[in-house]
Amino acid sequence: MTDPLQIRARLSAVAILLLLGVWVVQGFLPLLAWAVVLAISTWPIYKRLLVSKELHGKVTWGAVALTLVIGAIILVPLSYGLVKLYAEADSLGQWLMEAQKTGIPAPDWLINLPMMGESAKTFWINSLGSKEAAASTFHWLGTSGALGYTKTFAGHLLQRLVSFLIILLVLLFVYQHGDKLGRQVLASSRRIFGDVGERYLLHAAAAVRGTVNGMMLIGIAKGLLMGVGYHFAGLGHPAILGALTGIFAMIPFAAKLIFGVCSLVLAAESHFTAAIVLFSYGMVLTLFADNYVRPVLIGNAVKLPFIWTLLGIFGGMEAFGLLGLFLGPTLMAVLMSVWRDWIEDLEKSA
Image (tube, rainbow, N blue to C red; front, side, top):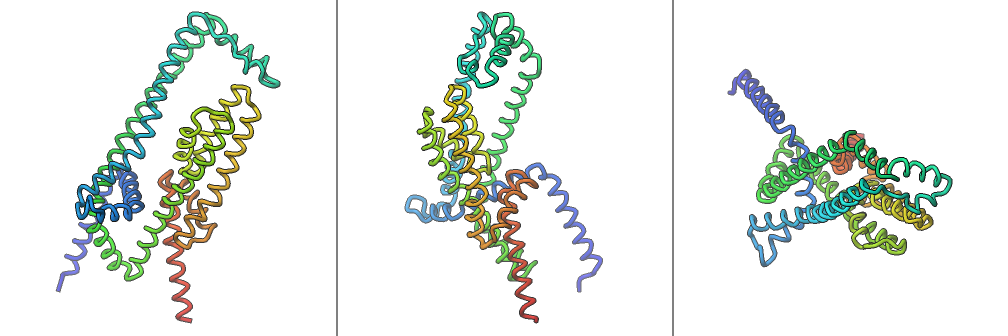
């Protein structure tokens, strides 16, 4: 018979070790959570990849292949955007050098702005209209922290890149050992919660997959529809703009950053009607997709009522940031499953 003191000492040691382990990896917990979310949502694709003729049974090569594909989906558009940004920054630098020599005349579209054209023209001339005014303005920009903000942005970008590489590394590990890890998690859940524990985990996994599927469907649909809108608005490269909008549309209300900037570009070119119509069109699509279509897609995947899905999405994002987009509906799905079991037990005991 085991000594109760020995049991308490063992449990205390396990608890202390667990707390120490969490403390050590606390900075990486969000990255681990992202890797788990990606692994759960893409696990069916990974299993299909393993049964293909090319990679039949080759776990390591299948894990590497899918990890590289996921990395490319994220990094290729980002790299393209950074290359275009660098090209624009180079052109902007040349434009600034010319501006400091001769000044910059006020553009026609600024002068033609309704109600504020004259005041905007006066402000422009005082700030950039002459050589002296342009030099003074650029000197103020250089000493007001603009360069510091640029360095901070570059530092954050590098940090995000390193974080994403860590996520891919963890994702590769999960792919390689996913079956074993899954069996261990299910066995532990059954031991702690009984048979219902396994069902709760399956509901949580279904909620994660439903959220990802909803994100992707919303992104693809909104990208296509906004691409058509960009074409009719007369913007250049509507396909690329549509693709960028689709990527941003996977995050609730983030797509308005793209079509909002496009609307401002149209307004700057004096196409005010096209700008207003494009912005209104994008807002209607965004409100309809994020407030109705996305919750319905996620809720149907886990049989979660619409209102709880909606609260899970926005409440999760408010509590956990972007990661809460997945955690919120998952928690709501598990809580709803627990509630249904509770009601069922009450009805049986009545």
